[in-house]
Structure formats: C-alpha cells, structure tokens
Image (cartoon, rainbow, N blue to C red):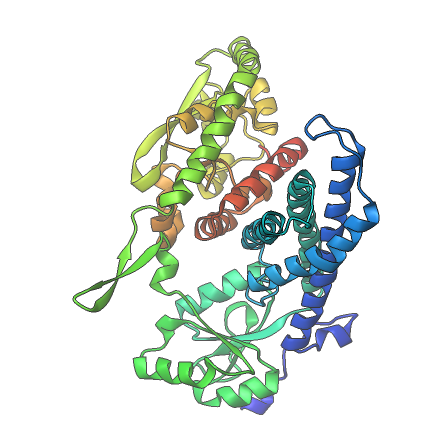
Amino acid sequence: MLDEISPVSTVSVYPELQSLTRRTRSLVLVVALVITDVAMVGLAFWLAYVVRFTLDLPLFYRDSAPNVFYYGALVVAFIVPLWLGIFAVMGLYSSANLVGGVREYNLLFRATTTGLVPVAVLDFLVPTFLVARGWVLVAWGLAFLLVAIGRFAMRRIIYQLRGRGLFLAPAVIVGANQEGRWLAEQLLKSRHSGLKLVGFVDEKVPAGTLLFHNLPALGSVDQMDKLIRRYGIEEVVLATSAISSRDRMLELFKRYSNSDQVNLRLSSGLYEIITTGLQVQELGYVPLVNVNKVRLTGFDSVLKLALDYCLTIPGLLAILPLLALLALAIKLDSPGPVIYRRRVMGLNGKQFDAFKFRTMHVNGDRILDQHPELKAELARTHKLKNDPRVTRVGVFLRKFSLDELPQLLNVLAGEMSLVGPRMIAPQEMAQYNQWGLNLLTVRPGLTGLWQVSGRSDVSYEDRVRLDMYYIRNWTIWLDLQILFQTFPAVIRSRGAY
C-alpha cells in the first residue's frame, strides 16, 4: 500500500533550489547572512565616522578627523571579525534562530551590545589603543539598526521563496487525531513556517486515506524509516496526545531525537492550551510544573508597562485638541453620548468598560432589526462591512481607527495595553475554545497583530490564531514592531469598517 502513494511535490520554476538538502539550505542562508552582516556592520561604522568627525555636531568634541583609512583598517581587521564571532556565539547563525523574527532582533541587540565590551576594555587597558568613544557609540546604534534591516530584508526574501515552494523542509505529522489536525491547520495557514506537510502517520488510519485538507495517511509508525527515505522527510512533528503508550513515545524519541536525517518536534499538548509561562519546581525531589497566572512576569512586565506609560502620557497630551474636535463632531452629527462603553474581558477574566467614541446611532438595534440578513451576518462574524447603524462621523472615525483613541485612558488605568490581543466581549469567549485560557493572561491591546494584518478583513479564526501567536511569542521587540506597523495600516485603512 505504501508504494501506491506518490510523493507530494510543489511545482517550482527553480527545481534545483527546491531539491536542496536541509544542511545545504542552512549553509546558503548562513553565508548570505554573514555577507549581509559584514556589509551592514562596515556601513554602520563608516556612517558613524561621518557623523562623529565630518558633520560637526554639537554632541561631540570638536577635534580634527583622524585618518579615515586608520579607522577602516580598525574595522576590517578587528571589529568586524570580533562582532561576527560574537554573533555566532550568541546564536545568530544557529539554525534554530535563522529567520526568527523578533527573537532574532532580541539576540541581535544583545550581540551588538556585547560587541562594545571588548572595545571598551581595550581602550581602558591599552593606552596606545585610541578610539573615539562617540564613534563607537554611534556605530553601535547604527549597527543594530542596519543589521536588523538587512536581516529583515533577508527574511522577506526567504518568505517569498517559501511561498514559491522553495527552502521548505518536507514534514509529517505523527497522529491524525484532533490535535494532529489542529497542528496541520496552523502549519498550513502559516506561509512562513518553512515546512511542507507531506501527510500524516497514524496506526489507526489505512495508508492512502485522504484526511485533513486532502493530506494523505502515509502509513504506520512502524513504517517510519521507509517513509522518511521515500519522501525525503526532514521534520517529524509528533502530536503527543495521539500516542496512547508512553513507551511508544519514548521509542520514537530514542529513534529520532539524535538522528542526523530528521528533526523530531513534539507538540506542546496541554502546554499549547496553557502557555501563560510555566516553571518547573522540585518538591520533595519531584519535578512539578507550576502554571503562572499571567503571561508576563518580572522584568518583562516592567518593560511592557514602561512602554505603555512612556508613550501614552505624552501621546494623550499631544492629541487633546484632536479629541475635543472629534467629540464636538460626534455631538453635532447625531444625538447621544460622545463616549460608548463596551463591556469586555480583561486580565485574568476581570471585566471592564472599554471607552470608544460613539460611532453608531443610539437606536441602532431598531435599525438593525430592519435588516435580518445583516443581523444574521453580525451574529456569525461580529462585524458588518456595511453597517446601517454607523453614523456619518462614525464612518470616518472607524476608517482611521480614531474611535479607539479614548482607550488610551484604559491604558492609563492599567486595564489595557498599547499592544495586545484583540479585546472581546464575554459572549465571544466560547469562540476561542481551548485557547480562551491563554487570552485572559495578558491585557487586551489598543492595537495588535490583527490590526496590522488586515483588521476586519481577517477571518475570526485567523484573529484567534494571531492572538495566540502574540501571547506565545511576546517580546518587547514584537510590541515595537507592531507599533511601527500600525501607523501605515491605519493610513491605508484596509479592513476598517
């Protein structure tokens, strides 16, 4: 039966690239990143030389510019190799961190900061090692920025290649149960995962049976070695709940965890549902898992609060005149209050009133009753593209998300964050299913991944997926990236209604 199934393939205009092995793909990417990093670090130090010695800025002492070739030789012979070594030690060329998004930025910031230490130590210990500290400091900031831009561009190129079926690792999911199908759904929806799902391996499903999204059952676990050779499998994703026997799971782990051919990945199982942050503590020499009540703790929580308040307080002061004008326009356009209070779910399930500028007529329910088809659509999607209840001013406010500006007061009150998952009403909790536990472990956001990914044009299922991604993968860099992307998303007003 195994021979009756033909290997799954993706038509490509670059078959020679599509057939690259995992090791070759990794090598190509590392070489490209090294070249990009060298160019960007060199450019950063050259621009820092221009800023420090030729622009005559009042921030620096006015002294004559040293020989530019001396600084060029210093960068080429000492600093660039040193920084590349630090990048390698910090994992910036490790396959686990390649094309890693905001995690990559976090590592990059640490690496560039660490790169300052040897220069500072040499400057202190070796009297003949004379380097302008302002030049090094400016170069540090520019290096982080330019290398991040270079890696961002490289990541986009890789994403484009993956969208064309290139730089993908053939993968199978062991287990065709509900968890296995959830895993397949999320991997298929993610265009950037780097995996090409070939099918399922399951002992209870006959080989050749078409399952979720027409992915076939390839065979049983006992046939795994043959399947790996036949389909060139490089990634084995194990749905842990599909393996009924612990001994069976240990057998798979022993067989493939140290294999050079494949990379074995275990699904998180319960941890996928409860990803609030877990700690392993030993009680009486027994390791037990302790579940945190909130996703962000310690310094992460302080960083996020600092970002919220440092941007919200000056931002509110700056837009007070705009808020007053918008309030006046709402009052003149239609009768009713200026502020609408929406009851939503907050941190740890605590409900609160989210403030918004009113964008609907006060008799909106009676207006909607005249359109039963729209009422049914609203019940399904919680959004209407052409909502008859929205006022003239409301259309403008929603187009540019100005109706959400009063939620800055919720941020000041500690009920919301500038960036976070989409806030939802209590009755929507049921639609988050098993992921509802995660949603309540962080504060809802004024903006988020759903905002920069198309807003109301994003399906409800994708909104849930984006929220879960944000909660699982939060870093301060992800918040900064989303804030940076919010302004163009608002200006384009795609999906705003």
